[in-house]
Every structure is written in structure tokens, then in C-alpha cells.
Length: 390
Ligand code: URA
Ligand code: ZN
Image 1 (tube, helix red, strand yellow):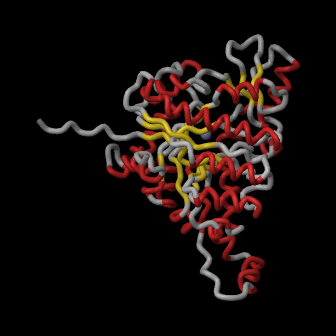
Image 2 (cartoon, rainbow, N blue to C red; image 1 turned 90 degrees about the vertical axis):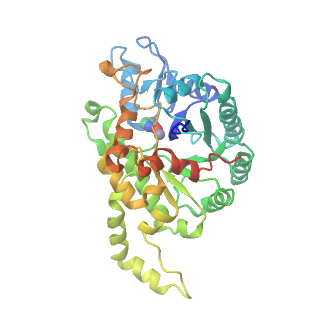
Image 3 (spheres, protein in one colour; image 1 turned 135 degrees about the vertical axis):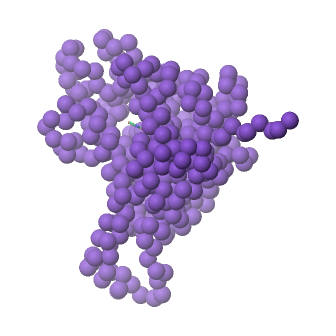
């Protein structure tokens, strides 16, 4: 009898959770990020973003005002719910990560122990998934380092993560130790991650200043901060790393950029041209003594040290990402549990349109069932994140 065609591996590398201890932290806070209950809502509300502050303040003053943030449904916190979402969308393997804003807001003295606890929680979720009802599903995770803690505590956390069998990298925001990812003080941490073969999944949270969205921003919901603020934040963070020479300083560093690199595939040419035409940069390069390695371009860094997720929701953006980084460097993601179906478009147990858009973008750009589509849907993640290795 002929062997059955193997089911293609679908790997979701961009999928978040908040374990119970994180929800307890947020529930005890009265500045963002926080969890708050409102009499008019069955679910508590999760309020994360600076852009949600005006609506939070209005809702606290006026019980009839629209609810701020998003409902904290069990999609954010429940492992069985994650597994059933995966089954619903034929996802065989997920690489979980704590959602934003991670542990960025913790006081220095608390960050280390809380990071250990949260990372252990992710490890045990991954280890226990085989005992749940969907056979064949596998879970891994990106760990969370305690970035507000002193450097030795952060380095100890990286070492801890190397001992957790399901950890395949870390998730990082754009602020680093507080001054961004071009901060020289971050270099020892990036070296430790590179030496430990832990890729960095770079994810936005802070967006752009609220003033950019203008006085009518409340009328536009989450659209401007999420659609434009998030990708610009990622783009700026990576451009700063590039200009500071971080990729050259840590050549073994591997970065996975959320949302297909923000706008980097589209703007890399402009960054390159601005560098090439900058008098001050040219003068600084000319005055450097000794034999210097030729400057690598953004394009080279994109193809040598960067991977992109495929969370871009359109064929056009996906093609740009493939052109920029190569078809062997893109990895499918869902951003679950963000972007659930709304209103009458379906319930959250059914198919999620946000997932379908990303699947269709891959199929349209590369051909449904093609080898290249298979690479993006799972093959690349298996290779890059060593998912079949012990
Ligand atoms: N996606 C995320 O990962 N985080 C948000 O806050 C919103 C969308
Ligand atoms: Zn995300």
C-alpha cells in the first residue's frame, strides 16, 4: 500500500500567552499595563498600550463610555484554548511567547525572580501539552529575560533558559535596557544570546508617541497604533542597531523580526541610500584607522542575520519580505490571541480571519502547496529553531 502523503507541518512562531502569575501582576496594578474589571463587561479588560490611556481614563470617569483595551478572554491564558485554536487552524507546532510588554515595567529587584517563574511556567506548559487532547501537537517557547534587572541577573536568566528543553530563543522589546537596542551596554547580553544559540524574536509594544495620531485618534480605535505604530517601532529599532554596528559586533546574533520586519523590507533601500549619502558617516568611516572590513549593507544583514515572520496579512507585503530576506528566512505566525473575530464575523472558537489572511498571503505569493509555501508555513521554523532536535 502506498504511504499516505505526510501532513505538512504548520508551525506558528508568533503566538502569545499570559500565564496566571503574569495576570496576577497586571491585576494588582493601577498604571498601564493593567487588568481591570468594569461592571458592564463580562470579561476583565486588558489595557496595555499608551494609546489606550485616554479611553481608560474616560471609562473610569464615565460608566457609559466605551470599554478600554481588549477583553481578557481565555484565549490569552488557557493552554487547552491555545491547543484547540491550533487544531482549528491545522497548526501542528507553536512557539509560544509572553505577550507585550513582557517584564519591562518591573522594578529591578523583582524582575529576576519573576522571569525565572514565568520562564519555568512556559517550560511546564510546553512539557505538559502532550497530555492534552490533541495528539501530535508540539509546543516550544521564546523565553523572557528580566531586562530591568542588573546585567548579571539578565545573564543568569539567559543561562537558565539554556537549561529549559523547550526554549528556542527569547522575545525582546525595542527598549532593551532602557535606551534602545543600539545601547553598547546591551552588547554582553546579545553576545550571551548568540553564544547560547538563542535567536531573538524582536516584537514591538511602545509604538509612536500618541501625539502622532492626532486629536481624532479615539475615532480610529486601535488601527493607527497597531497597523502603523508597531511596524515603525520595529523598523526604527533595527535601523538603529544597524547604524550602531551591532550586527557586525555580534555576527552570530540571529534576530526574528515581528510583522515581517515592520517596514524594513520596503525601506531598506532608503536606509542604504541615506547612509551612502551622509557626509558625517562618510567622514567618520574615512577617518577610521587600519584595515576595516567592508561595511555590510542592510540587504546583507537581512539575508545573513535576520529572519522575518509572515504576519503581514497581504500578498504584497509578503512578496517584499521574501525579496528582502529570502524564502528560506520567513516563518508563519498568527499573533494569536490578538485580532480575534469581531462582532458578527464569527465566534472565537471558529476560523480566525486574521489567520486566514496570513495563510492566503503565503498561498497567493508562493503558490498553494508549493515547496516555498511549505518552507514558510513550517519547514523554515523547524530548521531555524531546531524544533526536531532534543
Ligand atoms: N499584537 C500584539 O502582539 N500585541 C498587542 O498589543 C497587539 C497586537
Ligand atoms: Zn505579537
